[in-house]
Image 1 (cartoon, rainbow, N blue to C red):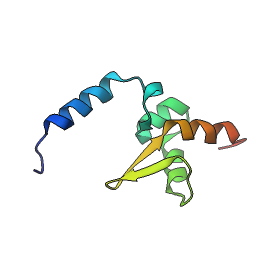
Image 2 (cartoon, rainbow, N blue to C red; image 1 turned 120 degrees about the vertical axis):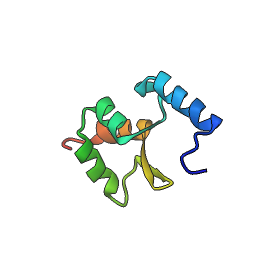
Image 3 (cartoon, rainbow, N blue to C red; image 1 turned 90 degrees about the vertical axis):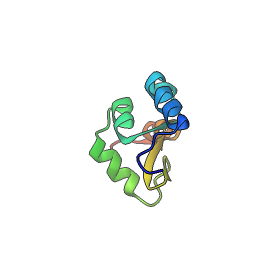
Image 4 (cartoon, one colour; image 1 turned 135 degrees about the horizontal axis):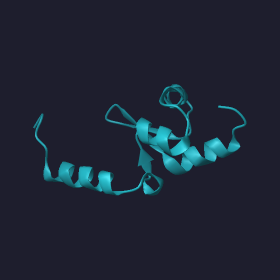
Length: 79
């Protein structure tokens, strides 16, 4: 099924385009950067750390849990 877009994929893609970033539970690196104001490179560096509290990995892709990112950023003095 490589290269085949399923109905599930179409629904998921449509939902992702329609849902505002601040309402999503999981964000991509790019969305997390836009949402938080932290650069993509810095977010990648933070999520590469073994004990990063706001990242989950699914099928080799990293996703940022928005609520945990908010908590993390609220506790930080410097990023």
